[in-house]
Image 1 (cartoon, rainbow, N blue to C red):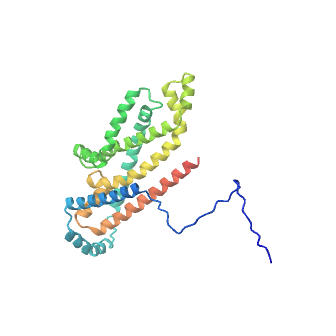
Image 2 (tube, rainbow, N blue to C red; image 1 turned 45 degrees about the vertical axis):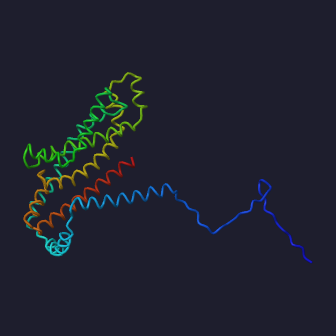
Image 3 (spheres, rainbow, N blue to C red; image 1 turned 120 degrees about the vertical axis):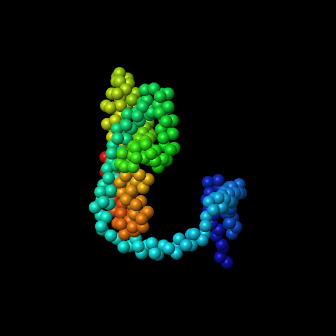
Length: 284
């Protein structure tokens, strides 16, 4: 009769622990977490219903709007090139407004950013006061600034530059100050140890190493600025937005279609150029 040979696997403790497998599913979620999720979605649903009832949305108006979409689309599809010169001039004006706003904002932002950065500011309390002022400027929407500029100066490019100057400068100052604070304190401490002044630390120590990050931020902001200039032109900031608003008001859909195409091509090209600039700066 042949004997059966049993093999025992080796374990470090000398004892083999039996492995029990069961077909039951293990619950991963926690009861408290599941309850919180249910409360969140229930609250979101209730809030959604409250918002819909508050706005008093008309479903009949929505259905009528849907039925008129094919008619509007057919009118937009008929493109007229009669307004091409004025649309080109308006788009060029919008780009110039964005460019001038960014250039002026950069000049103002570089010095102010060093004044509010925590690791280089010469007067701590003054830097904090400037931070609070910039916070107030950022909380006011850009459209409000443009409307205030239009109310004080009238319609046109000057109102556009002035209205965009405040939000653009506050954005750049905040972004520049964050880059300065992330640059490290080694350069600052080393230059202070040899008796360098505040201006020498800023312009000879920190600024040369921060030019590339600053340029990347500026290119991204210029891309945003062009799109904002087109949109805010509809409220009187000048540029192609004024023409688009007129075409919409007088139902000139053929000219509006050409204007939309020009805006799309321009913003797409600006975005491509901005992405290319940032990618090249990131390689250096």
